[in-house]
Image (cartoon, rainbow, N blue to C red; front, side, top):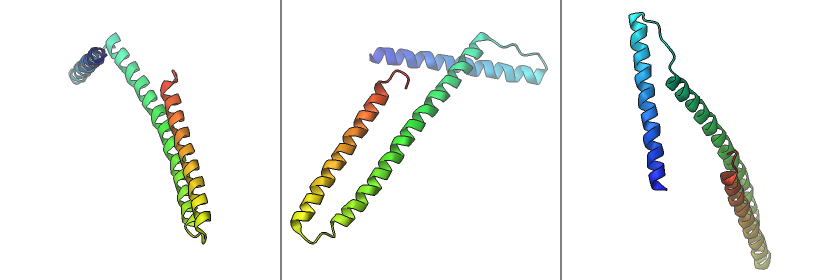
Length: 124
């Protein structure tokens, strides 16, 4: 598994270096007034970069949605804890804290399940 990762990184690095060399070659030919030809390698690198950017953007959007949702849940929980702390009766306070703990635990479970489902889905 680790060998496959290193091989993938090596191949990606080679592609990046080749792309940089091609870009440098284009820049120098533009300065010299020589027409530039589009190589298939540059097109492949550009296509890969575009797909990579789209995938990262989609991933960041999903993560942002999760963060915003969890932040909202956290604010609501904080408000509930502050209200529960004003309880006059110890039994009432204990009951509210147990209820709060159960809802918090359920929220964390749902978050973990959502993240696992997003991670396992082939479209992500």
